[in-house]
Amino acid sequence: MTAVERLATTLEGRGELRRDEVLSRHTTFGVGGPADLFLTVRDAEQLGFATNAAHDAGVDVFVLGSGSNILVADAGIRGLVIDNRARKETPREGGTTFVVESGTSFAAFARKMCRQGLEGLTWAVGIPGTLGGAVVYNAGAYGGCLGDVLTRVRLQEHGDGDEWVDASDLGLVYRGSVFTRGQFEGKTVLEAEVRLVPGDAKELLERAASYDTRRLSAQPRGRNAGSMFKNPPENPAWKLIDAVGLRGAQRGDAAVSDKHCNFFVNYGNARAADVAWLVEEAQRRVREQFGIELQREVAFVGDW
Ligand SMILES: Cc1cc2nc3c(=O)[nH]c(=O)nc-3n(C[C@H](O)[C@H](O)[C@H](O)COP(=O)(O)OP(=O)(O)OC[C@H]3O[C@@H](n4cnc5c(N)ncnc54)[C@H](O)[C@@H]3O)c2cc1C
Image 1 (cartoon, rainbow, N blue to C red):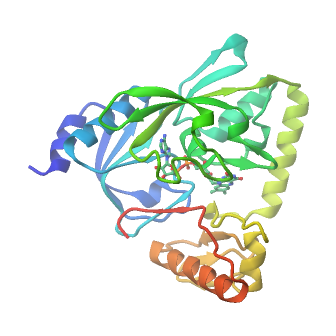
Image 2 (cartoon, rainbow, N blue to C red):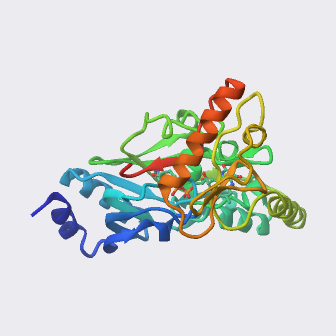
C-alpha cells in the first residue's frame, strides 16, 4: 500500500474524500490538473486533523482556499489537497470582535460586517478568496488591508498542536507575510480574529457599492486570478506590461487582458504552461526594457 493510499484510509469519514479530482474546477483561473487526494473539510478541527494525518503519513499537503491567487500546474498537485470550507463565525466582546474559521468567504464576511454597521473591512467586499488566503497575502485594496483589523490567528503546526499567534508576529506587508516568505511552512491557519469598530451601516454599504462599481469598470470579466504581479515601487505593473507591447497578447486560450494588462485571463481551455509562458515573456520584456524585475503575486503551485 502506498503512503497516499494509507492516508486515504485514515481520512475516510473525516470529510468528503475524492481521488484524482481535477483542480481547474476549484480555481478562479479554471486551470490545473488533478490532485491525488482531495478532501473537503467543513470545520477547523477536521482541517487540523487532516494536515496532521498527512504529516504522519509522510504525504505532501496543500491547503486550498478559493483558489483565487494560484496557478496550478497542468500535471496537478501530488499528495493531499484540502478544500477548506470551515466557515464558523463567533462574535466576541459585545459583537465587534469575531473569531472566524479560515474557510469563510472573505468578501461575504466583509459585506455582512457592513450590513451589521461594523467598520474596518468595507474595502474587502470585492476580494474573492477565503479568510485563510487573505491572512497569507495580507489581502488589501483601496488603501485598506487585513493587517489593519487582524488581531491574532490560530495556527496548526503540521504533525503537532495548535496555538494562537499575534498578528504582529506574522510579518504582514504589501501582499505578503511569513507564509509567503516560507518562514511558516508547514503551518495552517485554522481561525483568525478580527476587531472592527461601530459605524453607520447605510454609509458603509454605500461605500461598498462604490468599490463594486470601481472594480467592475477596471477589471476584466471571465476566469483569472486577479493581479498577476505585485506593483513595483517605480510604476504599476499594468503600465509596464502595456509599454512592452503585451496588451491582449494570447497563447492558446491564455491571454493578457486587453482591459487590464496585469490580469491574465483564461478564454476557455487555457493550459497552465501557456499562462506561465506569457508571465515569463512579460518578465523578460520588462527586465530588458526597464531593468525592473516583476515579482509574481499569483503563486505557481503543484507539479511543474
Ligand atoms: C478577480 C480577482 C480580484 C482580486 N482582487 C484582489 C484585491 O483587490 N486585493 C488582494 O489582496 N487580492 C486580490 N485578489 C487575489 C486573491 O483573491 C487573494 O489573494 C485571496 O486572499 C486569496 O485567497 P484564497 O482563499 O483564494 O487562496 P488560494 O488561492 O486558495 O491559496 C493561496 C495560498 O494561500 C495558502 N492558503 C490558503 N488558505 C490557507 C490556510 N487556511 N492556511 C495556510 N495557507 C493557506 C494556499 O496554500 C496558497 O499557497 C483577487 C483575485 C481575483 C481572482
